[in-house]
Length: 156
Image: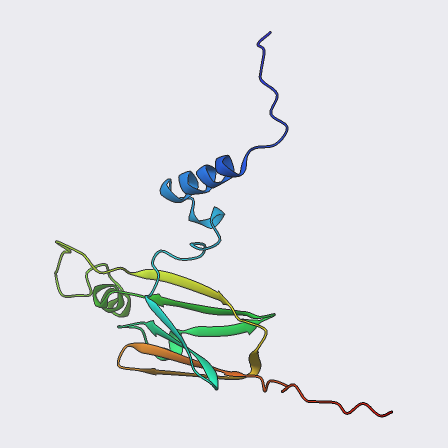
């Protein structure tokens, strides 16, 4: 019989190490930040007095193929970028798009993507606009009007 050391709970450092290992071993579904996609579009987030602005780089993706949802304060962007080679092959019903070509080198990322963002409580979930132009998806999430502090007169 082997003797094993008793460890009632794993340490926070061990949990972090496990998450990193899962990420590098390709188990991205186990890491919420990376779950659901094979690549991630670059995103810029800005804030002004009236709204939160999110710009996501989505070159080569038809805006109709992008799904934007907002549920319980979580904004989700989903889509898929397919190579022109893959699109042509699908249209022609064969594996080389009828062009007799072979892939020699690929540097661009293709496949599904999912990005999720937790919105602050001041975001107005009923007032969101999304536009896509020149390969950039722009989301504008309006802010809720803030109540201003006011002085209350004390009567005596």
